[in-house]
Image (cartoon, rainbow, N blue to C red; front, side, top):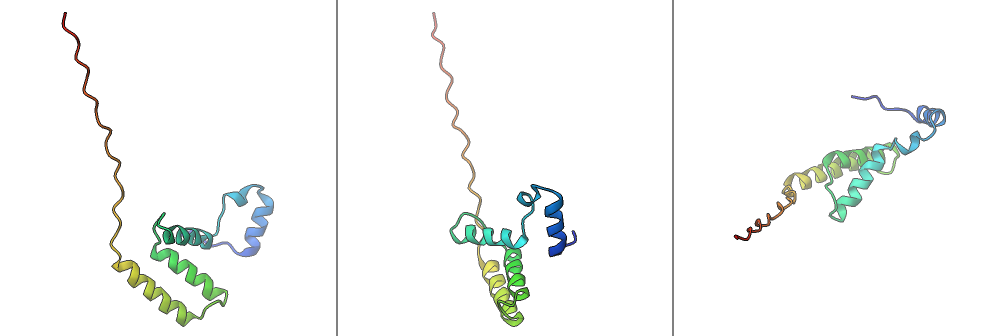
Length: 104
């Protein structure tokens, strides 16, 4: 499992390697994007995304640990009960019948 970088390590990395900011992105940002896409039906929202957002909220003091555990349990129940969406399969291209050659 990769080690997590601290704030000062990220700052120094961003200063050292110009342009790396466009490559690195927070797991919280990824989870937010997935939540938004899932809410409008453009993607799937996974339990791991809910865990990341709840951990962030607890770390920042936005919610208490008890509430985080309760909401996570609700999310796990809801996501576990949801039937997996079947991926839309592309229809194979219809083959055009070969043109018959005119007989002479």
